[in-house]
Length: 379
Image 1: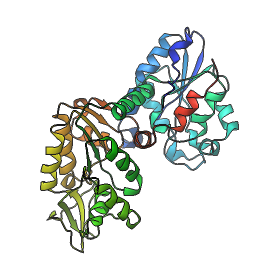
Image 2 (image 1 turned 135 degrees about the vertical axis):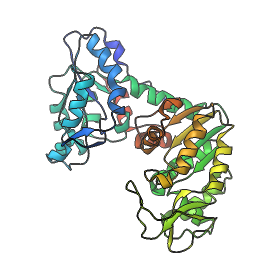
Image 3 (image 1 turned 90 degrees about the horizontal axis):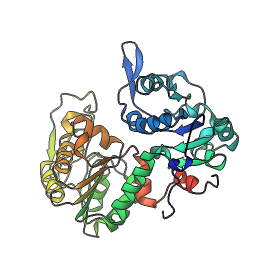
Image 4 (image 1 turned 90 degrees about the vertical axis):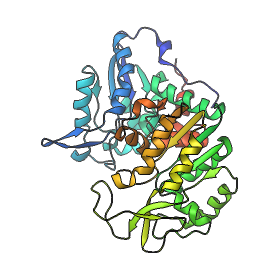
């Protein structure tokens, strides 16, 4: 991506102007004292500086976001009301529209819905990097109708990821985890070409292990990608776990945990068992690879870290990155949740607000929402 994104600073005075800001407030909520409340306001707080600047310049600010997957229908379970209450506490002057996905035109990228959405506004700002990989109406249509710009966080996300990929200080170590190899294989392929070392963990690592002829028991596996995993490993700079920790089949795990004792496996996991975290030898190897890094990109946990029994590997990697002294970038999603769980949010150079968007940008070098902003012809 070579053409710069348009900036809202060029608009001058905003006195009396109405600005629609697309945000990504798809935040976690939970029942607290009888009503749904936001349990992690990281994405809301990230937008406050932009809101404050626009308000100080005299603008009326209205935000809009998607929330969950109501499938184009009004569903009270997916109302933004809990998010609206938290936003009102943090920035009382900013209004939040109801869930964009209550209208089927949002995910269908319907121009008519986009036109209705922007009606009555003078300007549009995309501050939703985490949603800019989706060609949805609130992302794609406003830049064709009114003067549009990138928000400060979106600009920062793009510049940080671009510099990391184009001219990283070396050694550059990339860490990729998570469950599904199908979702992450593209980024591993790209990073294997750009980084000095790529560390692969999480459920996706078992398909890589299988490509080496190792047994993986009932661990997560996708046979469609075995050959491609083998090809990536042949490059010689991708590390995968050499041991694991897990449970017998059927033993409960997850946020509620269980009482079954953890089983440790060497390079092979026998039938009847499932790997759920990296083992001690893998932790030692991964920490050693992280130590000399000058630049680190991390996206995805090393195991089912929501269950404390299987968060050992994720925590060890997080602490190794935090203490490395490297320029460290965390690519959103579960990685951010892990940092918060371990109290390490402030130990990283940059924490992205977008998970899937970060991965797609790293893999493809652009996003539909960014392209829409650059192609906006309004001044």
